[in-house]
Length: 133
Image 1 (tube, one colour):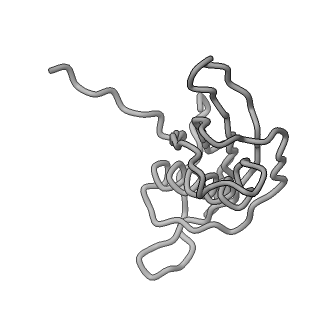
Image 2 (image 1 turned 120 degrees about the vertical axis):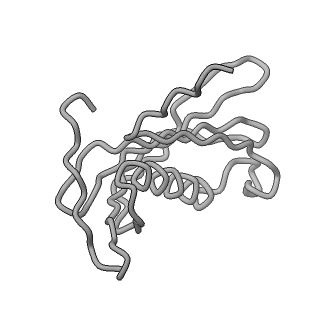
């Protein structure tokens, strides 16, 4: 069996399907559910990059461009795009895909600030972002 290639250290991808309990009375994804998936993806990307415990410090400029409907596949893509001393900025995109047609649309985009913590829960230094990332 060939070895499994490493995932990009600055990226995380999640797939979800929109079920009825994720939707409002219009049959579209609750905004809060989309935010929860985005925050989770940002957490995974930042944790994978820093290899430390991380917490969300802030969500910034989340734009809901298009509704996501029940039955659609949702791909949430998070990328660490900037690193400070103890913080990481993570851009997150939410893409909806129609499982029958395969049509994909960018529906939501946002930025999250994650803070790395040491074993005592204090802010911890994060390595610099590589030039090629």
